[in-house]
Image (cartoon, rainbow, N blue to C red; front, side, top):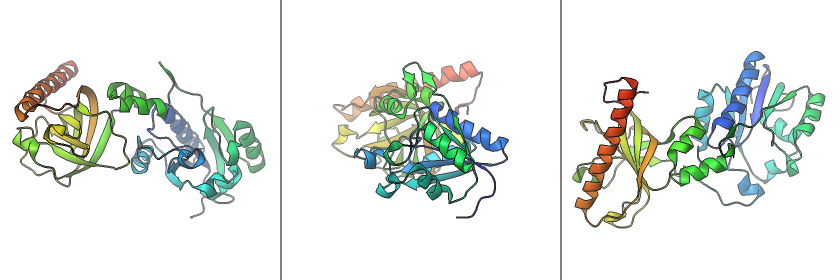
Length: 315
């Protein structure tokens, strides 16, 4: 590791989802680093510590590590360290963990924490412990208060429940941004085109948390343009059993250019209905016609409210 001379402001956490509560901690870390002319550093984990500490089976990520790192840099973080959490890391005392991450003698200036923060072997590293450690090592501890929502403290657990229920509007309010799925466009069975609804089939990160199956109004970022659309999450059981897939239909895309291999980000705006098994392809087409009409009406009302005329979605 290259030795760092500038002061470091660091925060430590899983930060799955990077909801508004997490963002408050990140913003405080970046602010302190800028005040001191230093480096804003975030240490996060993969796998989730609960899989080791509590023996919880691995769960899908709200934000897989690569997505989390991208979001953190967009929030102004200079360095993101993803620690591979295992039994050896679990056994470290707080000072040992800090040395492992930053290197012995690194210029840690401020450790930013939340009110319920604990770290190190047996979770001994609470605020009092860390403040005493900071007095010996020359760093300060800054505590950032919880951000409260209508249901209490914002948490990844609450956010996960909203996404799994398909409540993407509420989830997006907690995130401060739409809940999005991203991936390269792969090949599909071609059924959408046969039905008059061509779709882009997303190869989503295998560890990404998917929302409840169904049809969603979506905003789709592709080729530098944002397209209104419909996104389907489900296994298309009308045509027999199959794996869960994510398919985006872009309302105004002319289809002249192949999308295969392109990266598409589909932001889920509103769930229109759950996944259904239809008695025939014709019944499915009728339902999709209704879905498309409702999505078009939604985007038209949004455009009218914003005073825009264009068919693409305002950024």
